[in-house]
Amino acid sequence: MAPVASGELSARERADLDKVIRAAEQASRVEFSLFRGVSEGDPKAFAQSLHASLAAPDRSVLIMVDPLRRVVEVVTGADVRRTLTDAEAGLAVVAMQTAFAEGDEVGGLKRGINLLAEHARAPRSNHTA
Image (cartoon, rainbow, N blue to C red; front, side, top):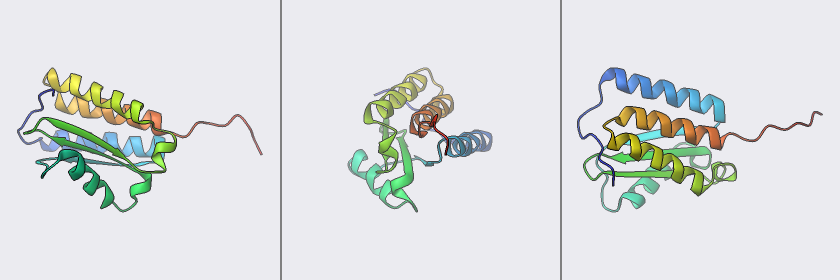
């Protein structure tokens, strides 16, 4: 697993991530949540339980990053999976891990969120009513 910084994010980094998340939500019409902290037990099961506790899990994407265990999990809701495949989510995880390995956690998260939003966006129709 690629290394992830274990220190706290600065207020500016958190604000930057919040801005990216809001833009991703507007572009994709999908809700994004980011959990960065220590996961309990199995990381995948922990991420799935976090996702299930969201207000609208079917329309949500959860990114869980455990810096101490060096784990990244992405959980997508049923509605999101109509446009965002597991393979596309996997590519976003690889992009994040690559940036993490270079010491750029915030940049990796931004890149991953943007990739997930791009693929989660419903295709535009060329038909008009």
